[in-house]
Amino acid sequence: MTLTDTPPQTAQPLTPEYEHSVPWFWPMAAAIEMQEVGLKLFSDNLRFLAEAETILQPPEPGWATANRVRLDLDTMRLRDFSPQDAGEETLPVLIDAPYAGHSATIADFARGQSLVETLKEVGITRLMVTDWKSATPEMRDYDIDKYLAELNTVVDDLGGRVHLVGLCQGGWLSAMYACRYPDKVASLVLAGSPIDTDAGDGPVKRIAHALPMAFYEEMVEAGGGRMLGQSMLAGWKSMHPALQSVGKFVDLYAHIEDKCYIRRTETFERWYENPIDLPGRYYLQAIEALFKENRFAKGTFVGLGKTLSLKDVTCPVYLLAGKADDITPKEQVFAAADLLGTPHNGIVRTLAPGGHIGLFMGTRTLADIWPEIGEWIRAQDA
Image: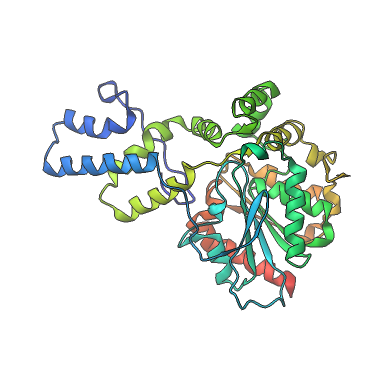
């Protein structure tokens, strides 16, 4: 799997003579059948098998940029990427990372592919990231209110007012927070964030509506009250089965001598193949209230004792969507423009090339769009 904004092409169907029961052995077996065996091929095959094992069972992901833990709460560790001598003349920028089954390191993926790095380069010094914790059995009953309350604890610790950058599922949580505490949010960035889940079309929307709540409840019950990350990972992989079972291993074999490709692949698989668990109550609440009933967009969702209305958000807003995003279609992001209380001249809408993950760590989007967003955030301070 490549790490550009453009999704890799699905592998071509295999002809019957090259089909094998264990997909990642296919390149070696096919080559043998085509009588291309030699010393170099044998060496490549050994490296391929070793790399295939690495990307199937990679170590946990790490942070690319130096940081410290400012707060250690029940739901998260607040990562502070600010220099020790950073002043407080500007408002802090808080990146609300996705909490949907993968690590928050997507916001600081790797050198040259880091949203944190990009924002720091445009002059944002006070920069934080919500590092959401994998749910333990003791966390199984945490609900959306718990996460909103701890987000509020973070904002208060940072001085009571922030620029909020919501990525993916962190976007609807950020928008909820801005509805509940509008005076505490100076500006709001929603990137790949599903705000109106009835808008557009995509596999997530179709699956959410097609499967009954009993299905999700059974999965949570099987996880002992949690939605296990490995179960969600299996579901995501089923959305692109050819790519996940064969395609990425064919690509790996084709690039086995490319050290840069191998390094990028290993970094990605450390993030992708190490999912985190979610509290069952939080997960079921999100599925039913947000993705099935769309209560947030309809103005009927209750957060921290108050019915949340997007019309209460009047701060400047930046909406970023991916043209080829099949996780959060652009319509679900841009629909926010007509739901928010912010005047239309206070809302920026940008459509980036590529898909969902590329919005946060794709080299093109980080180079062409996020510096503009960073400057836009700084302009709100000015």
